[in-house]
Image (tube, rainbow, N blue to C red; front, top):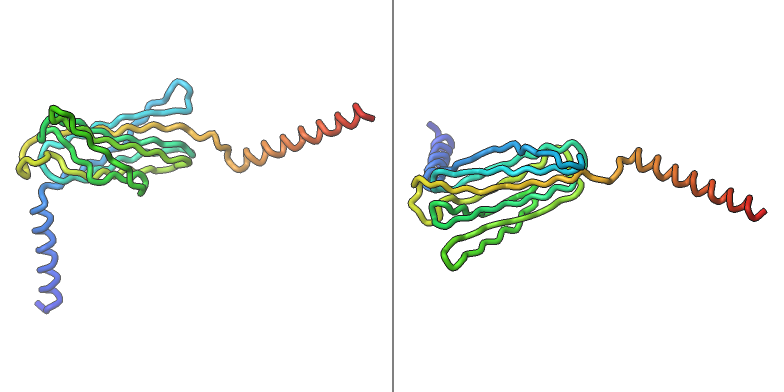
Length: 187
């Protein structure tokens, strides 16, 4: 083998070793199911995710929108012990990082949560959750740790450009008719 090939194999081997040393990387991909509200313009969904082995993970949620919408995303986990705890390291909502807050109660129970909203989204919306399941337990241990992603969607009341143009033209016609009516009354 030539030097370049040997170096490349060594580099790839080192990378694979580093990945396996970092722990099992569990990954889940979830298509978000939305339920329509009674008004027909709002939708909601909650997607629970469970991890059963201590280690790092990257999960993705895919939300499919049919038109411009306001989208609110929330993430929450509650753990009374390390075998129930999820540590969110990064949550990206369509590439925007969501702030995550963690509170510890007097009894040791920890709650982590985050919330972010974005206006005018349409098409596919992606939420990526990176984290670590299992707290300080040994890597690879069996656990039952979970979190829930909640999604609220409000279809936009912003009209499409063609509709907005027609609405403005209609308002203009009504304004002109009002001006004509005022002139007739005066004259």
